[in-house]
Length: 144
Image (cartoon, rainbow, N blue to C red; front, side, top):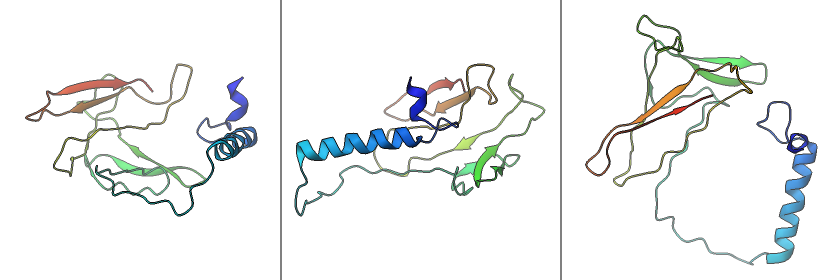
């Protein structure tokens, strides 16, 4: 079972998971080798990564009812949206605003916390990408 490779939180590897990854890396290096003095070409695309789980620092806009809270003794943080008068069916209503800071279209990758199997601790989340000249508006849901 795959369960043995993950710790109880399903986010971190267990001892067996670390051992498996180390073994796979050793095999890969043995097959391919290590290039002496490798050169790295300039990255032609832009990227930006934001994750407040470890720091509690959320560097973009979110509605003023939301707040950052530490949710466990290891210093993990969540952005919490309390219930509001115009809340959706999950009981919460909130927005996070991300702006593409680059002059070209960019991919959006989202990570999120989840529990399972249902019922879950977290509400369904709707993500909306606003329209641009090149792209129509898109909406999709994460069932956490």
